[in-house]
Image 1 (tube, rainbow, N blue to C red):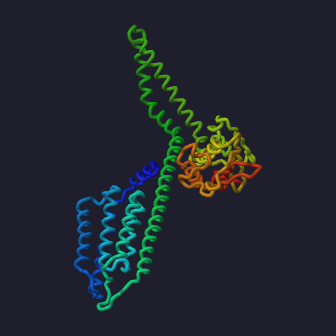
Image 2: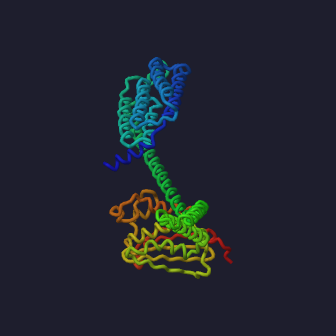
Image 3: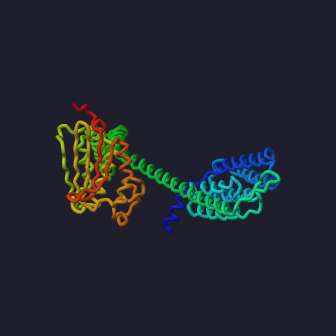
Length: 433
C-alpha cells in the first residue's frame, strides 16, 4: 500500500495542464453544439432543445471562467483534475440521458474522461472516475427519454440490445483506460530511467575532465602565487632577523614554495597523462574496469584472445567504462567464487564477455532484461535497488554502438553470461591493415 501511495505521489508530480483540458472542453462544446444544431434544424427530430442548450452553455461558462481565472501554464492538482473530469463526465451523461440514453450513438464518448484520467492521473483517481462512469452508463440504460427520431415513428430498442450496449461501453472503458494507464506508465518509467542515464553519463564525463580542470586551476593560480612568493622573499630580506615577525615570514615563504611545487606537479601530471586519459588501448580499458572490483573476495580471471600488439586503441569513453563496470559489478555481486572476463578482437569486431558462476538470471527476468525498473537476479530483493543499473549500463553501451546478449550458461558453465560486441571501427582510432 505504501508503494502504491509513493507511486501515486510520483505520478502527481506530472500534473495535467489546465490549458489542455480547456482546449478539449472547447472541442466538446463545439461538437455538442454542432450535433444539436444538425439534429434539431437539419433532420428536424424532436429534441429537448432548451435542456440541451442549457447543459452545453453550462460547460462553456465553466470553461470560460477557468480561462480568465487561471493562467495557461497552470497545472492541476490530482483532486482538481478529478473534479473537472468528473464534471465533464456528468455533463455528458446528462446530455445523453435526455437524448435517448444508451440508444444514442454518441454514448461511447462516456469513456473519454476516464481514458484521459488514466493516462495522467494517479490510479486511485482514475478508478474512482471509472466507477462514476459505470454508474452513469447504468443510469443511461434506464433513461425514460426516447431517442430523437423521425416524427410519428417510435424507435424501440430491445432490452437485450440495451444490455449489449451497456456491456460494450463498460468493457471498452475498462480496456481503453487500462491500456492508456500502462502505456503512460511505461513512458514515464522510460523517461525517468533515461534521465538517470544522462545524469550518470554526465558524472562520468565530469570525473574524466577533472584532470583538465586541475591543469587549468594550476595555470590560473600560478600568477598570483608567483606574486605572493616575490613579496614573501622581499619580506624575508627585510624582516628575516626580526624576533617578532621573522619566523612568520620564513613560514610564509616556505608554504608559498610548497604551493608552487604542488601546482607544478599537477601541471606535469596533466601534460604527461593527457594522451593516456584521452586514448586507451583495449587492455588498459579492461584493466581500468576490473581494478575497483578485485578486493571483494571474488576471483576475477582475464582471458585475452588476440595479440596485444594488434589490440584496438580507442578514445576514452565514459559510457563504455561505466557500462562495463556495472556489468562486472553485477557479476561479482552474484558470483560464488569467480568471474571470467574474456576479451577478443579481430579485424572486424571487438567483444567483451563477462560470466560468473552464480545462479544466473531468472527465466522471467531474462525475457525482460534491460528494461527500466526490472530487477536483475533472483536475489535482487535482498540486495535492494530500483533495477535501473542494468538499464543504464545497457543504454550507455548501446549508445557507443555495442550489441549486448544476455544468457545463462549450460551445465558445464553455469551462471550469467553477458557478451558486449562492437564493430572494430568504433573501438579503434587507428587504421587496421
